[in-house]
Amino acid sequence: MSALRKFAPAAPVLLVAVLLIGPSFGLIGAVAARDIMLVATLALMVSGLNLVLGYAGELAVGQVAFYAIGAYIAGFVGMSLGQTDLLLGLAAVVVGAIIVGLITGVPSLRLSGWPLAMVTFFLVLIVPNLIEIFGRWTGGGQGMAVDRATFFGRELGAYGYYIVVVVVTAAWFLVVRNIILSPHGTGFLVLRQSPELAGALGLSVYRTKLKVYVLGTIAPALGGALFAWLDGFIAPDSFTFGLAITLLAASVLGGGTSIYGALLGAVVLHFTEDALTDFNQYQLIIYGLLLVILAMALPDGVVGVLRRWLSKFLPAPGRLVNDDTPTAEALNLESIAGTPIVVDGLDKSFGGNHAVRSVSFTARPGEITALIGTNGSGKTTVLNMINGFLRPDAGTVRIGEGDEARTLSTMSVDAVSRAGVMRTFQTPIMPVGVTTVDFVALGGYLTDSASLAETVFRLPGHRRRVSRATVRAEQLLSALGLSDVMHTDVESLPLGTRRLVEVARSLAASPSVLLLDEVGSGLDEGDLDRLEDLLRRIRDAGVTVILVEHNFPLVMRLADRVHVLSRGATLEEGTPAEIRDNQDVATEYLGTTPENTGGPQ
Image (tube, rainbow, N blue to C red; front, side):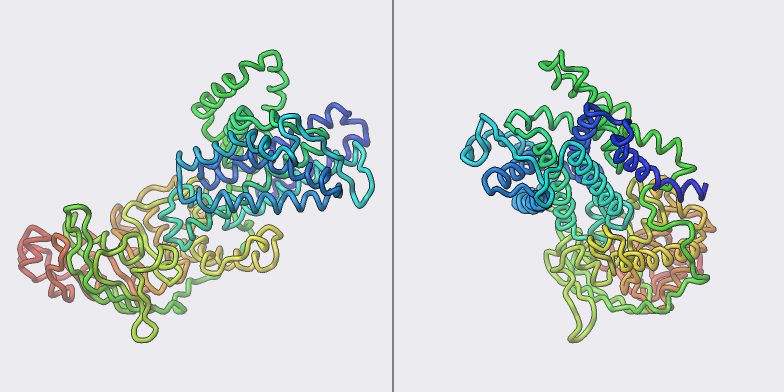
């Protein structure tokens, strides 16, 4: 199994080698070479769609527009500027795609879901109109002749250009592979699953959306340029709404969260299109029906089916490191230093419901401050205001004291996280397609992440940071007795295990403040013992812990200070012994009297 995992990455390299040397040995003729080049241009577009829609979950489906942009930039550079050099043309196409991506992405990505899809589909629909409007440079409806690309002044020839197309396509897929099989790719999957979780991990949701959107524009633009140089002529009817539907069908067929699924989808759709030449007037209907059928029958695409069959032999999606990653013997929490949290007069209303009323308390380093109360008493609302999910109507939340104090209640969610505040959720949120160890490691990696360039080129800084984050993730999982699920898809874990994984994910970032929302709910006795032991170690290390919990005995054993909320306001506060013996708490929270609360725990 280990050997297969090590040799699995060699399969794409072998395929590229065969494609490159095939024509020299008569294995690939002129017709087949043209088919391969057309498949490559289609695969580049599908890859851009997979990156944005499949991995990041953003309904940005304007790849055909960028395909046209790439084609016309290549034509304009050659015909109007007289520059036919391949490298210059590719550079102009990439720069043009990034500029247009930023211009269209900055306003449109403030939307999400179907509104974003409509905006990007509109880009596709207006392409023919824009070509007509700028007919002086584009040739208008009559089309534009495109000079063949040269390489340092030399003609490439048919075989030379074939090599260029294969190399450019292979280079792009290598870039995508290195991004997806990295914490950046894991971050995209987290964003797709839950923008709230992404923000809580320290990812700027908007900037991450913009980053992946712009990356997704480069591939179709490259495909458009390669197509223009291949055919030597471009016209508006090459960039239609029907092509956008074809891309969606190819993405669904190959698998939206598959690196190489774009190639499979492109191959099938290209040759299917050739087979349907006698039914051109029905192609849009056929592809639309195919899209619906595939979405229902193969939600993860053909590659997803193959992945499940071969899961015992191939690396799980998103693995950051190999099986030889060293793991330290013991978990060290001594380096974590806590910071006080001061909650002052928080108020929050939702319509006519006054959820939180003038709540104030201070949570100190080296202590567990518990918030307890009945359902609807405002506990989670208070946590949401501390970590930035909600803005208080009145009051403030500060981290630190004196001159170093900062106001959290005016910060964004990701800024609060980067300030050292991590949290778990009442209902654990787990991304699909990510292993447990990679999910936990992401929490630590984001506090000291490598740049996208370091990730793409696998520079030492990237490897060092990934290794450090992964080792800590393995330590945390081992401390919680979860070594056996490290390489299991985190989304498939049972509820109790998910809660422990969330704690590990939060601790991986070495937070100064830890917010725990009903973390003990759903745990069996053994898991609860491990959690209790870990929380004591976290407290003793000096972390500031704010615990929302319904397990009253657990709160009594762990908490240093307890604040009881009732109908959004503070009912009582004090030590566990004081709260346990308080008549008002017994009546309001436990529905009983001090005599039958169970006594000292």
